[in-house]
Image (cartoon, rainbow, N blue to C red; front, side, top):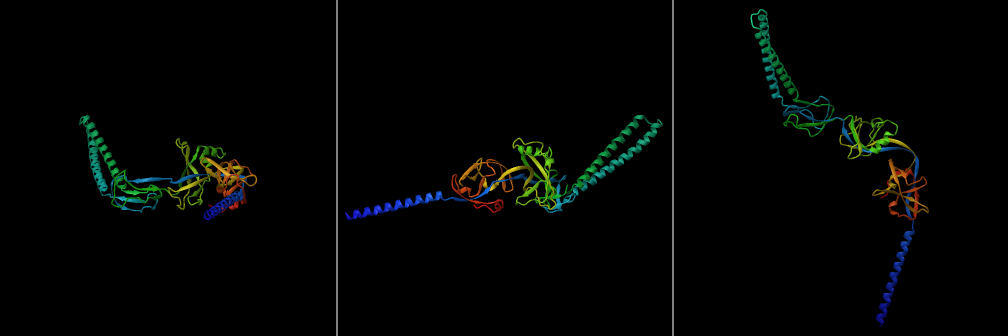
Length: 384
């Protein structure tokens, strides 16, 4: 009986402890709900803003060619190293020329024989002409001799062409650079056999100036065309700047030089090529860069930091400080980016305050502890 009473006492004590623990837990949750969450907030910026447009581009050589030999044979001399910068007309490779020298000598000998036969036939024609004038031979004999002379003259012309072809083949055994540029490192080595017209000895690309190829949408093309700077991209696409992959700005401006004939049906974009001087040989074919074009100036544009904008699927929204310093989620329509800011086209007013840091940890209706910051504080990386 005594044991039963003690067990009941212990049991009641445990129940009491659990109840107190639960009460304390509920109290801490309520306290957490009431405690405001600290966030960094910035007033929406309103100012006249020059808008820029950025496009992903790729550097391409203005001139690029695969070097193929016009004659067949073995490479007996390599006059440049792979990756070398070469000048127009500079010798690159030498193909074995012995067979072409022999072909030239043979053609020259055949031409000499044909010229000798032509010279003899001309003398015979002169003799026949004198005899015909004296009516010593039939007119038909003179006509036959004149025909023979013409045939020999045609043979001479044919052998002269053969000699010229042999001279050209011999000259083509020396491969030279077609323009100023740089050759690739996948060139052939000495001893390689080259087949005329099919074997690629090397690829050469011009390096100054270079093209940067990029594409813009049909809508963007129309926007630029309506800026009043001209009716074609070549007219308004001047003073383009280039941002390299490391974030640095290329020191030379460029301009649009080539525009595709129309908008691509599969992508709905227009392809353009901007030309940039490359005196330091910094830009290489295949590099990626961002082409920046100056657009219109938006009067009284509203801007917010890019890191204040949140995107979920096809929705874009920001967290603003509402009445009573409570969090409020606001859907917005965004325009172009301007540096580390983003133009807001719909959804905000100049009086709104947007959460720049800490939005991920707050919920709509949550009480906020507001810490105001300015545009200069945006240079500080956001805490993850």
